[in-house]
Image (cartoon, helix red, strand yellow):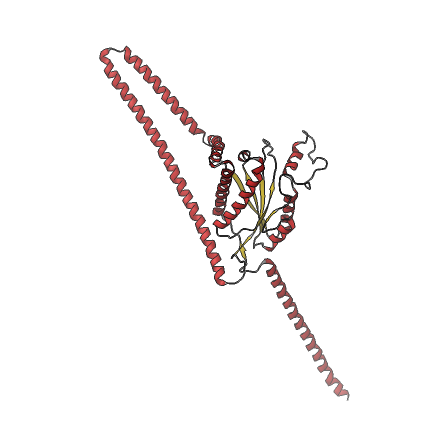
Length: 379
């Protein structure tokens, strides 16, 4: 399996981790990847690793937007955390993404277009993934970071994305929101979608043929490392062919030295040997083709099963949304549920307070009744 063109890592924050989400968004908002990386690379061998004088996380951002790009969640860490809290689900608070293209491919993109490519890939991936799975228009915010890879110094631009843990039932939002359930089939679809989107962006910037050529050159050594036996088989075939040629030359030399009466017999014998070698080579090539065909059939069957699983998940989501729409009952938000629970508690406190007042009044009345007969006897 070749190395992915781009990595889309999907995580989440659990319900109740509001402070953790706010701190993460604040860190991503003020962090500059290149400065932090240089702070460690410039440290001398054996010296204590710390930031250079005057540098910290709170520096002027370079090569990236100063704030979050708002697509429905907010443009500051305060707004993003508050919106995630308002749209939290039963189990999760929000989802966190990392979208990072391969630096080996991004170095072919002109430097002034790299961040434009990453923005387009990020926005188109989220919109396509939500639209293909019937989740409606996505609400998200993202910020782009820039740093150099420590192994080879290549520029490694990447995006951090925050999405809510719920999705709207209908476009108008009148029926509320439901939990955003993501299965393994959806994750496989996400990897396929982000790869296709990034390949299209490379084709748009570099040209389709040039992009395919760069991807093929990148995958060639990786495939060689993963399948070293293929080259070995090719070398063995060449060695076998060379050995056959040498054997034929020796046979011809022996045939010329042979007697005239044995020439025809020897020639027929060599011809039979050559035919056998050709047949053996033909059988080997046919075996290789049959193995390749079996591999393609297995791959197609696996892809069909995965597509079927994805279709079932999508149909389950559509049926779930249809049931909610048929009920016509709006799903309350987390804030509304808290307000309803507080109202119920207030009503219970009023009810029990009334019971206590009534019991006190009954006790006072009983005491008055007990005193009246005693006063009558004294009269």
